[in-house]
Amino acid sequence: MSSDFTTPPDRQHTDSQKWQKYAGQDILPMWVADMDFKSAPAILETLHERVDHGVFGYGRPVPSTLEAIVTHHREHYGWEIDPAWIVWLPGMVCGLNLCSLAFSEPDDTYLTLTPVYPPFLTAGHNFDRRAVRVPWNRENNAWTLNWDALEAAVTPQTKMFYLCNPHNPIGRVWRRDELERLGAFCEKHDLLLISDEIHCDLILDDTLPHIPSSMISLELAERTITLMAPSKTYNIPGLGCTLAVISNDKLRHRLERNSRGLLPEVTVLGLSGCEAAYGRSEDWRQGLLATLRANAELITQTLADLPGVTATGPQEATYLYWIDVTELNLSDPVAHFESHGIGLSDGNFFGAAHNGFVRLNFGCPTVTLEEGLRRFAIGVKAAQGSA
Ligand SMILES: Cc1ncc(COP(=O)(O)O)c(C=O)c1O
Image (cartoon, rainbow, N blue to C red):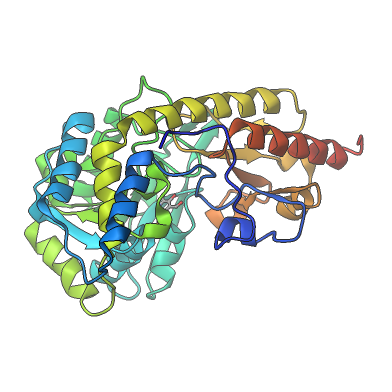
């Protein structure tokens, strides 16, 4: 089996959530965050072998799976994970919700920076907690943190900070000095740090290292719950395999206690996929990054030629592009672009500052993206009355 980043797999009439949404309509789905690529060959081979084994009992990770995780994070980020720190979960969204339940009480709050991946906002609401939104600053095509607003948002009810590292949907990589300051902020206010690092292996600007939040200091590691998964990078979200890495024994036991009896085990296919992803798919990941870099560049160039539309910042990470269409004055931007054949994510769900943002998923062959951008440009021109 070889890697293929140029041929779009036919996902129509399949179990794909992304493609079912527009079944029977000529709308190219570029919304939910999975990619239109086959997974890495090593993952496919491993899954074939596992299926051929023919027995699908309750699973437990084997030593080689743990070794693959530990080695990957040591080699890429210098992070030495003790396998005893890992709590296995069937999904990242489970992890975000479980942290809300386990580490706060009803009416407590946590801080998060908006726009942000929507479950960061609903994880509180689901359990009578509340996400307090602090908007990112956007100036001159750059995103910065509003530390004064963060300080002002803290109350005695604030128990946690939900961090997206790197940040979806603005595609931004956190800098060391920012994480250090954030660590000091969490210590000052005695907050736990819930660090979602699912996009860490998808950094497009290779001058920017991913820094695991837990690596900032031992003090910060003691108050950090890191959530990560091979699902985004290796395109296996349907296999349901997430890791919560928690070095603080008390916090880890608390998370485990709160999940007992509620969450299913990670399946044997999830465990096999995880090992093949972290352990044997680096060449594929590099090929993926090359394709995503070219795609991001294509979007940036296309948007530069479209009046009324703004790329919101350099695309440093992820395959999700956050686009400002405010100037088009559309009452429902997603419906407008759907009517021109492209299905985007609605910025309002991410807690965008105002109506007028959409997110485009460019995890697809360039040929698919070209068609999507062609339709997007027609939609933009129609909005300006010049189509
Ligand atoms: C930041 C972030 N966290 C979590 C998830 C979802 O993870 P899962 O499908 O494992 O629940 C996504 C999916 O896009 C994401 O962008």
